[in-house]
Image 1 (cartoon, one colour):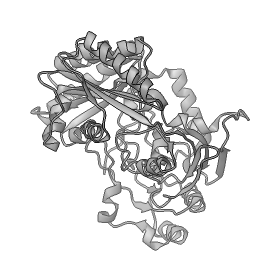
Image 2: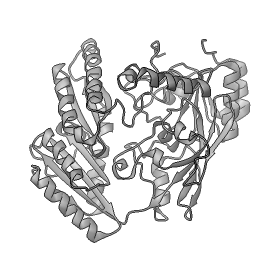
Image 3: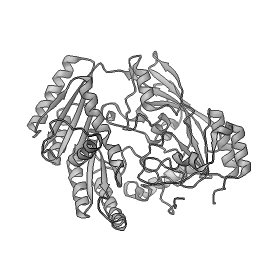
Image 4: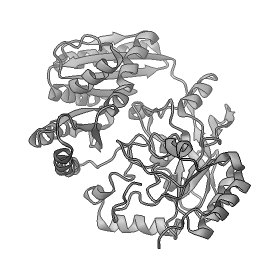
Amino acid sequence: MPYSKITPLILDQLKQIVGERYVLTAKEAIEPYSHDETEDLVFYPEVVVKPADTGEVSQIMKLATEHHVAVTPRGGGTSLSGGALAVCGGIVLTLERMNKILEIDRENLMVVTEPGVITEILQNEVEKVGLYYPPDPASRGSCQIGGNIAENAGGPHALKYGVTKDYVMGLEAVLPNGEIIHTSGKLMKDVTGYNLTQLLVGSEGTLAIVTKVYLRLIPLPKFRKLLYAPFETLYDAAKALTQIFYHQIIPAACEFMETGAMDIVEARLNTKFPSRGKAQACLLIDLDGSNQDELDRQAESVYEILTKWKALDVVSADTKEKQDAIWRLRRSIGEAVKQLVYKEEDTVVPRSNLPELVMGLKEISKKYGITSVCYGHAGDGNIHANLLKGELSESRWQELSKKAIPEMFELTVKLGGNISGEHGIGFVQKEYLSIGVGKTEISLMRSIKNIFDPQNILNPGKIFPEAPVTPF
């Protein structure tokens, strides 16, 4: 059944719900909501609506259900899989006005927040009282908690501390029909029926719209140390990484960067990584803890492992200024790559298979004559493989990348991995879903979607393979 267009009557009703100033229809006003951070895709919604609270979200969804209008929920617009694209037109429902931290509960180590709070702002606020919210996607300065929940966001420190799902204890959410549900809350244990909280985390905004979040916090680590190690080959770097874990050391973060990625960010920021030389890859190992002596012993052990496994150098950044400078370079890689014409694949494998993954990804890109750069959260086996258009013609670029990408995913799955570690399937990867997920599992997922959203009005055109949608 085709979706209804936005009529003057629907516009009037939306204005009655949220106020006229929070209903946008002019092209220049809705342009920022026509794209996210996914390559160069553009889909204009018919209208952008900015609710202020759960009640307004509920009324909007009831209206959309009544008229069969497509609704795309949107956080900070930082999706890398097309998750925030209004591929079926209709309404973009942005949660940016719902941006209040409602409570920092020091007794229960919890924070209660609205979904529009920027992740880094929440982290900074809880750190003021000695607490820590670890999930830290590269876009933490602009992404929002609601979007992090939709994608089950991770980031570098997911290695030691886990991803978003490990901190979400309860949710308030609005169903596509406008009903409001509550799933648990400030409870460390709750097996009262099915775990609806975790079903919604990572559902990419296709099942419900989150309007309130209960997040678990932990004590803020007191001490940090950062080690940076260049290697002559990609394989040496990947192999050295596996040895750290073989010796039962769990860093807070362990990042992998190949030379091509480092070249791009150095050129963009006009600065240099330290002690790089002719290295083809580098590791960034972040250690933290609450005991300085124990942290020093751990750092010494990592130093010895890296040296033994062919590190060309090991640089210790033991001041906050040095650590921030190196982390700024690492976190800037993704943004620097986005300035080029590229396609990013979010591969993930068991950590022990990382060397084979990295080398295999490079071999496939070379086979098709495509330049590739790899970087990512190597400590948890999550590598972002970026294919660059370079000097290829547009037709040749499209032809070759469409051949290379499924081969990369097939290799990933063969190595025990899957096609997305943290970016989600969204719009751009849905045609590859069957590479990583079986027919029965896809059928179950479709059934769950149908139960929550029988009209398929909430973030349609995402996750599941279907007829292609043309941007407009």
